[in-house]
Structures are given as structure tokens and as C-alpha cells.
Length: 302
Image 1 (tube, rainbow, N blue to C red):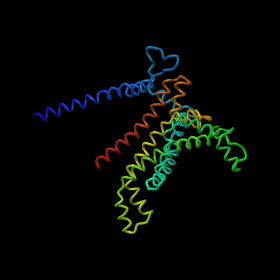
Image 2 (image 1 turned 90 degrees about the vertical axis):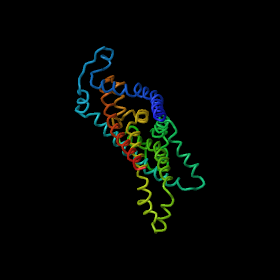
Image 3 (image 1 turned 60 degrees about the vertical axis):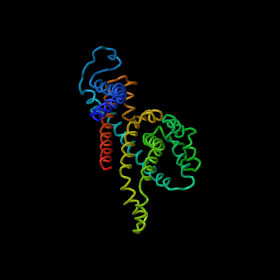
Image 4 (image 1 turned 90 degrees about the horizontal axis):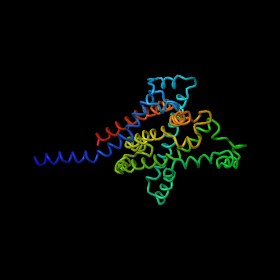
């Protein structure tokens, strides 16, 4: 009986410590999400914001955003996907290569790894300003280098041309995300037992065989986590895009987050802004469910 009463008391104590975090989540996360969904089903703009009763319009905001001619919502969704996939590809390939390098023991490994981490530690807005100046037409270091080596005849308007503006954002985001990929993959590589590689050496396996048949299979959980988390962090980008291009030129770099911001705080159409934000939320929510399922499967295997 004493053990049972102690377990009940222990459970109550656990609930007591979790309760403040639960309240915080409900007030600062749960309420805004629910309120945002309600707002997207109403007609709320700068003229009706102060009204006590808001007109309910159902799915009209969503339908109008998707069906309007040259839909900016569909364009921003396309841009977000292109930006995310391209950024993750560069981040993962370069980050994985650096992880394979720094997992080896050599004299400057820790020092170089610390230097690479600097780009991840700098605030995103600072990085965005740095790259904005680097890609600027007059005095930008990118144009200066290309002109010096005679790769171009005149400065390129990197942030003023649709194609180059998107690639400028991808390069800036890749520079930020490479250390994140590197550190997680380095951690995953360090957990692979050396005995496995020694056994493969005895069996006469070469480097490529060890990489594709040992490293990659044993690193699959870490790779999946890196890719899913990278998708979530990259897809919801706002600050980097807003500082560098503000979604321009001509919506060429408009993302779901920046489009939602413009609708809400530039055009003051709060309901449509909420609708775009909900589209972004639903996509990330589905991806997050996949990530939670992956973690659960890993725990069950362990």
C-alpha cells in the first residue's frame, strides 16, 4: 500500500511540475493558433478590426487566395518549396562532407569545426544584412571578385533579378544551415562503433563499400532527422527573406511567411493573412507529425 500511495503521490508531483509548462503552451501557442484559424474564416480588415462582431465568410478567404488570377499564394508556395529543397540539398551535401572530415582526428579538427559554427551562431538578421551588402550592385564583394577575375564585364544586379535573387537567398541560407547539418551528422557518425569498420577491413571492403553499406545505413536515423528538421526550419523562413529582398523583385522570392506578413501588416487584410499563415501551419504540422513518428519508431527499436 505504501508503494502504491507513493507512486500516486509521485504522479501528482509530476503533473504539478508539468502544469506551468502546459499553461504556457495553451496561452502563448494554443490560443494564437486557434484564434488565427477563427480569424481566417472571418472578414477582418483595418475597417472592421474594432467591430464587436466579425462577419463569418467560411472558406471564402482560402478560395479567393487560391483561385485569384496569377495567385500569389500558389507562387509563394512554389517559391517556398524551391527555396527549401535547394537550401537543404546544399546544406546537407556540404554539411555531410564536413562531418566526414571533422569526425577524423587531426590537429586542427576542433578549431576548424568551431570556426564553421560561427555562421550558425550569428543572428539571422545580421547574416541577411551581410549578404545583402555582399550581393549589392555598387561595392558588393561578390561583384568585385567577379570583375577582378574578369568573369563578368559589368556588375550583376543579384537581388534585383528574379532568378539571381532566389539563388542569393539560397546561398545565404545554406551558409547558415551547413553547421547545423554538420554538427548533427558528426554526432551520428561518432556513435557508429569502430568494430564495424574493423570487421569490414578484415573482409576486404574498400572505402566506397564501407560508406554505402555501413555508414549510410547506420546513419539513416540521423540523416532523416536532419532533413526533416531542416525542412521545418527552412520552409518557415521570414527574417532572411524580408531583410534581403522583402519578397521581390515582382514576387520572385515571395514566401508563405512574407506573403502572410504583407497581407496582414501592409495591406491590413488580416483574415487573408491568417489564411496564408494557416496554410503554412498545416504543411509544417504534417511534416512535424512525420518527425514525431520517426522518433517513436527509433525509440521502439532501441
